[in-house]
Image 1 (spheres, protein in one colour):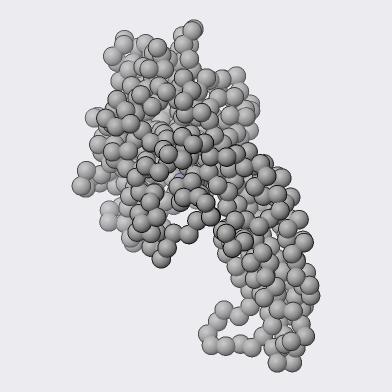
Image 2: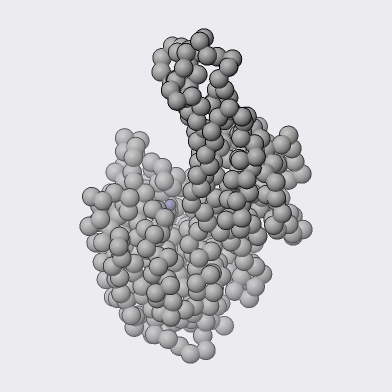
Amino acid sequence: MNQLDQLAALLRFPSISAQAEHAADVSECADWLVDKLSGMGLDVNVKKYSTPKHPIVVAKSEKIEGKPTVLIYGHYDVQPVDPIELWTSAPFEPEIRDGKIFARGATDNKGQFFAHILGVEALLKENAGQLPVNVIFLLEGEEEIGSGSLYGFMKEHKEELACDVILVSDTGMAGMDAPTFSYGLRGMACAEIFVKGPSADLHSGSFGGAVKNPITALCELVNSFHDEHGKVAVAGFYDDVAPIAAWEKSMWSTVPGMSAKDLEELTGAKEVVTEDGFTAAECIYARPTLEINGMGGGYQGEGSKTIIPSNAFAKISCRLVPNQNPDVIMGLLKAHVEKHAPKGVEVKFVPGHTGDAYACDPHSEYGQAAQQALEAVFGNKPVLIREGGSIPIIAEMKKVLGADAMMLGMGLPDARIHSPNENFSVELFLKGIELSQSLLRRLGQ
Ligand SMILES: [Zn+2]
């Protein structure tokens, strides 16, 4: 089977981790990977581990002393396909159109990690079964549902997974001509706020003016989260924020697609509005935020209903940056909500999940090898960015395994990950195979 046919075979598994009815498909996809890795001519130690949920596949090359060990992480589970009617071709029947392979998981993340598998396979063939570095593949089946099993697995298998550096292709690429090296991720702190007013919805005529409206109270509270400069007004929120380096500011001013005009076109927002003193790229890559993700309460039906509702709620989340500690931030949020709780209502703050921010030095020895490999394969100098999103498992890998992650993402802006018509550029897939070889060769020198 040629390389593209093999990718198509991998994409045919409906390995949707979120849906119990696909558990067998997830497991069969793991079996397929075990077969592929075992049959590659690599003298590997390939194992499929069962976990409380979906299997984890680990494959290790024969250890060569004196060579660095590179752990290549990927996830073979995928997002659900809904809304199915918006797909041009069936999500698990890969189809090539306009130089792209369309299927759920094509970019996120099967196409990207499979390029590394094929890169390693090519190196093995070329060198009679000898790799330039030690390689460990770590492939999980729960990334799209929070990597629940991987946290414990990494701690239990710390020795087996010991490595010098981690390679991950599960992030964005600024454009086909802009090879992208991501060296940071934002962290996360989520919470919910519940505001309770009268014990039941009240007649707004009989009681309006004397009983505090919980939705009004919630709006006052939500309004206290930001000041007029676009800054988060929670006391102490910025205390630990690492400053943006001068080289980062100049690098980020050149990243394609990140101008205010580009972002307006991409998002459909009327105008890009940033925190005072920072560009859009700086705000997305390296400044923390507090977002209101949802609000509710009161009458939502047809026509009017003149009530004072009995309760209201808001869901909030912060994206965090180095060196903010999510637990500290959660405490600050709670204190802010308590301090600004309007009178006349009961306000409850319920903390949700958190994740650490992550950053490494893209100019380290390994980082330089990655930059050189990107330039060699794509013919352009890479852009060095931090991702606005969060992959909490990366910070955890640093904590448990002590290794930094080079995130060489190949997710193009129009790859439609998590959406109908997800796709992966065939050219990019083939370049990914080359990139993997070029990088592993350099790391072995
Ligand atoms: Zn995803």
